[in-house]
Amino acid sequence: MKIGLVKETKVPVDNRVALSPMQVAALNTRFPEHKIVVESSPIRCFGDDEYRKEGVEVVDDVADCDVLFGIKEASLESLVPGRHYFFFGHVAKKQSYNRGLLRGMMEKGITFSDYEYLTDEHLQRVCAFGWWAGVVGVYYTLRGWGLRTGAYSLPSPDRRFTLEQLKQNLCSVQLPAIKMLVTGAGRVSQGAQYILGEIGASRLAADEYLAARSVGSLSYAVADVDQLVKHDGQFDFADFVADPSRYQSDFRRWAVGTDVLLCGHFWSPKAPVYLDEQLLQDPGLRIRMIGDVTCDIMGSIRSTLRSTTHDEPYYDYDIKTRSEAPAFSSEGHITVMAVDTCPNALAMDTSAYFGQMLEEHVFLPLLEGRHSAVVERSTILTEGRLTDRFGYLQDWVDGK
Image (cartoon, rainbow, N blue to C red):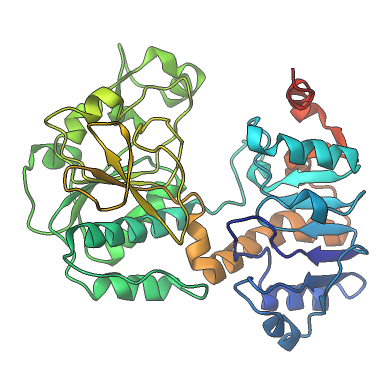
């Protein structure tokens, strides 16, 4: 079997890769009957020479590979017919902007497995970047506060930015004495909590946070969805996921005492809108900076009008006109950070981390010739045909 790591073709660019140079070299040594090669790329966080140094072959063409691994959606033109691809496809939720990609893969007879659906028997994801998204989300959000207020300056990450640099940068400035609310309890929230703890932020209990008008140092609270909604009876997360329409937002009590909001909560279109247009215009609203790591466009946070990029992470939300304005253009605006690929800011760290998970759940079964239920659950197409689990996409693909 010949396996290729493809160069990323999506714009804006993504610098991550499925395996680090050392990980590829170790797998090639362990499984000499197979071969993993790397497609040459000028944008990858690990340069071609770093792979060559580890004895990994760097190629200009991966058409002879049986299985191909990327990170973000591949361009239709780059896809080799009849091959098995792994990447984040963003098609299973009927994302309109990728319908052409799914159609193209079907026409080319491609087998496609989506990283997002690599799950265990309990349907919990086993390969994800969420924790890192929370880490970077805090950095970008606090960097934005510094740019907004002029109180301090944090550098923009470059391609070889690391977690240690991120922590050192945050510890090198006088961080503001503000209240930050972190929503959710999953990987994004956990990553955010980790970095806040590393930089000495104080965690407040919910009651303490809600009662405090001001704080003496950077302080935060964590509120999961059970604290963001109200409902007749005891909150049950499974019930909330099954029918969130029976719940109402209870977000105002948080909004009037929060300076910075970092979003890492679960949300679906049927769930309540937490920060709606009415609350955004509420005179009591205190929030002036939002780091929407989950980046649900016009979702539970209605100031998230669009996603942003690493090159231009911020824009302002004009409360009066309910529209976008240039970043940091008025103290009365709310500044929004909505980078939807936050982990790419730590491309080397996140690639190695993701590679460890892929080794366990994908590469080892593949190279050992074992059936993998994890891969099977993630497979949307088999030789261009929708699998049973994703058969619901057929009408969408057909434009019905």
